[in-house]
Every structure is written in structure tokens, then in C-alpha cells.
Amino acid sequence: MTHPDPIIQAGRTENLNVSGFTPLITPRALKAGLPLTPQAERTVLAGRKAAQDIVHGRDDRLLVVVGPCSIHNFDQAVEYAGRLAELRERVKDRLEVHMRVYVDKPRTTVGWRGYLMDPDMTGENDINKGLSLTRELMIRVSELGLPVATELLDPFAPQFLFDAVAWACLGARTTESQTHRVMASAVSAPMGFKNGTGGGLKLAVDAIVAASHPHAFFTVDDDGQACIVHTRGNPDGHVILRGGRNGPNYAPQFVAEAESLMRAAGLDPAVMVDCSHANSGSDHQRQGLVWRDVLHQRTRGQKAIKGLMVESNLRPGKQSLGADLTQLVPGVSVTDACVGWDETEALLLEAHAALGRETVSG
Ligand SMILES: O=C[C@H](O)[C@H](O)COP(=O)(O)O
Ligand SMILES: C=C(OP(=O)(O)O)C(=O)O
Image (cartoon, rainbow, N blue to C red; front, side):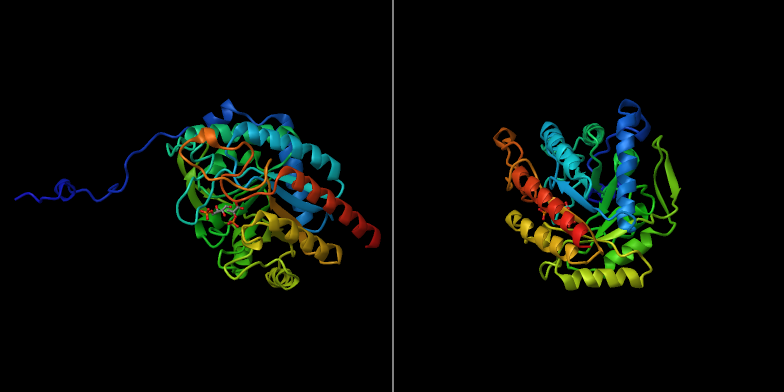
């Protein structure tokens, strides 16, 4: 007698929840079509070195990672990058400015997964197109002399994109993930590790220690061949305070706690504060308050503060992603609310002035 359930009839035990497989371009083919240009390469190398020097205390400037919560439009991202590249030049003696080119979005439950995963924002998930557009954008941004900062989320993405990345981070949802820690150990760029969504700080320091050691994991090589990667470990990790379930964590006692946990782990103390997320209660109008408070701590002598992060876009606020994409307002975030360009410029200039006074008094 045959079983009534067709799956049991067929005797299948795998791919029961898979609706299809689509071939993915190889890293080599993607890079051959969109090679890193010499100018972009110079930006990546200089951006990495500057961030490494800041993290290890060899450079007194502040690392500023600023830009959209998520990229969703190529031209708007290039316009933003053009403005930020000019501003970077004006403040570069005291601030090392990198642009958030965040294309792979972790979600609390479900939602649009970002430009890399779904560049058309239709739910079609044309990842081949997302890879190509993201790579082209990262190269364009780097060619402006502006280093690219991004979140490391999808396990295969670095092989396609990370030659164009100057600074990377593990987000609050993945800092405790073994998969992501071992991937971080392979990354050539300096990396920030956020505290967990619950506020856990020790787990970020544990992640830095884990990622600084050699590991092995599996992924694909440049030819798309499945392979085991053996890593050396990433020595350039730092903590990012982003607040947690119990509220913000940018106040001096949290910075001091991060500093002492890092010292206890034998690491150079290096803390970046994310002015957004739980530190602003996701209210973009509060990012400036956090920015000023942290700057004040730094100019009053808290040298473990090495960086600041701001979610910023051409225009302030956020909009929801409806079915009719023609209704989207240009330059407004479709994920977390961002400060607009004018405020971004004001905040960076204010920091530049404040750090000038630090030099004079320090
Ligand atoms: O920075 C982005 C978001 O905070 C994160 O991706 C989670 O987003 P969600 O809570 O809207 O899903
Ligand atoms: C997702 C982000 O932040 P977090 O991991 O802190 O939520 C982000 O910076 O885009």
C-alpha cells in the first residue's frame, strides 16, 4: 500500500523546504567584470591602515563611520558619497571618515534584506544583480577617495566584495555567532564588533578575542569551488557600543567597562560608539545628543573612544517600503531613520572643531 503523503511516497528527506536553486556568479567572474581600480585600491589600503592605526593608538584621529542605514538606490548613494568625500577632505586632519555602504541587512524578524540580496526591492532576490551593483558602487565610492565600511553578514559575500572594503563590522545580531566570528578571523580589514541586542558587552570582547585567532571554515574560493579556508586571525578588532534592551550604553561607565574588559583580555582598548540603534532609541533626532556626549567624553580625556558611527542619508527620517516604489522619496532611508545631510555636515564640523580644542588643551 502506498503512503498518502506524496513526500513520504517519494522517500525524500532533504530540500523539503527549498523551492529552488539558482546558479551564482563566481567571485572570479564578478571581479573580472568589475576589477578594483588602482585609485580604489589605494583608498582601501589607506583607509584600512588609518583605521588600524586609530584602533591601536598610533593615530589620534577619530574614526567616523557615517552613511545610510541601508543603500537602496545606486545614484542616491553616489550623490551622498560625493558630498561625504568633499567633507572628508575638510576634516581629515582630525577625523578619518568612512562611508557606510551597508547592503546586507539583518532583520529583527522579516523585512527587506538589503541591496545585495534584493536590489530591485521586489522580493525577487536577484543576488547576482545585487553583487554586481554592490561591487560597482563600492568601487565608485572608493574611487572618490572615500573608504567603504560595511557589515559582514552573508558567509559567502566577502569573497565577492571585500577587496573593496576598508572597515567592516559584525552586527548586534551576529557578534555571538561562531560562524561570523571565524569569518571575521579571515577579514583583511579592521573590524568593529557590536554589543548584543540585549546589551551584552562581554560577548563583543569575546568575539574580538575569537576572531583574532586562526580558524578553519568552509566557503567557496574565487572559482566557486567549495573549500576549507584556513585563517590567520584578525588582530584589528574593536568594540562598538550600540545600546541594548535596557537602553543606551554610551555613558562614561559603559565606555569604562568596555575599556576594562578589553584590557583584561589583553587587547588595545578601542571603543566606537554607534549614535543610532538602541543608543538613540531609534530616533534619528537623538543621534546628535549621543554624538556630542561622546565627543565631550573624548575631549575630556577618555582616549579609549576611538570612533563614532552615525546613520545618515541625504534627507532626514525614514519611509516605509510599500508596493509602489515610484512613491519613494529620494534620499530617505527605507530602514532605520537617519539624520539628513545638513545635520551630518554640522556634526562632523562640530567634532572637527572640538578635537582641535582637545589638541590645544591636551
Ligand atoms: O540597522 C538596521 C536595523 O536596526 C536592523 O537591521 C534591524 O531592523 P528591523 O528591526 O527593522 O528588522
Ligand atoms: C544593523 C545594524 O546595527 P545593529 O547590528 O547594531 O542593530 C546597522 O548598523 O545597520
